[in-house]
Image 1 (cartoon, rainbow, N blue to C red):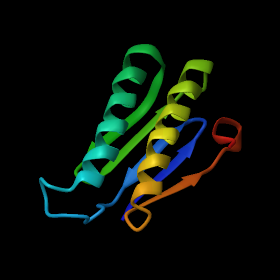
Image 2 (image 1 turned 180 degrees about the vertical axis):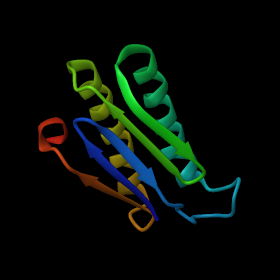
Image 3 (image 1 turned 135 degrees about the horizontal axis):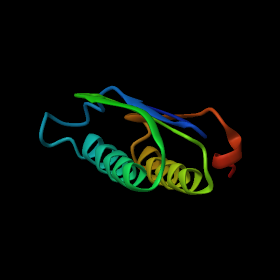
Image 4 (image 1 turned 180 degrees about the horizontal axis):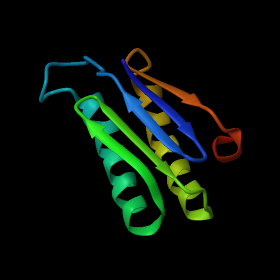
Length: 102
């Protein structure tokens, strides 16, 4: 299972969906594409304090700003849709409700 922890200061994503074999896992691919796109935007437009990425793990911490909150909200919305489509393979843990209110 892919686990996603979101806060106003960043995100942590870890684990493997195991929906399919390596290279064919559309759930892992979807989460990875979302996270990496958000991270690239953060690197260009936010103050990234700390970041780490290895196979099956990604951690990003940013200074909180309106733009970082928008990007984190966008990540949340994308991951939420993947979680809804594949609930056995993705789990979101929202730490700060300010950005992630429904």
